[in-house]
Amino acid sequence: MNAETATLPEQMTDDWVDNVLGRMLTGSSDVQDTRDIIRAYKLAEKKISKIVTAVDKANGQFNIINYGEVIRSL
Image (tube, rainbow, N blue to C red; front, side, top):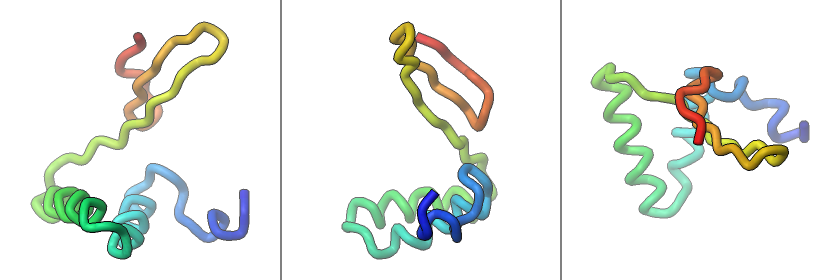
């Protein structure tokens, strides 16, 4: 962990999402457009899925993880 990430909220929490959205304000127009879409969903109280993808190097398996729950393995 470096000094910058030590001050960030825990990853994948709602506070972390809000923090990322704030940092996206200084990104390119594409990043800001994406931020606006995510923010609109949050403001409309629609569900936002927090998804992580990973590859298991031991067996080459590709995993899609929905906030800690494996939802599909390929």
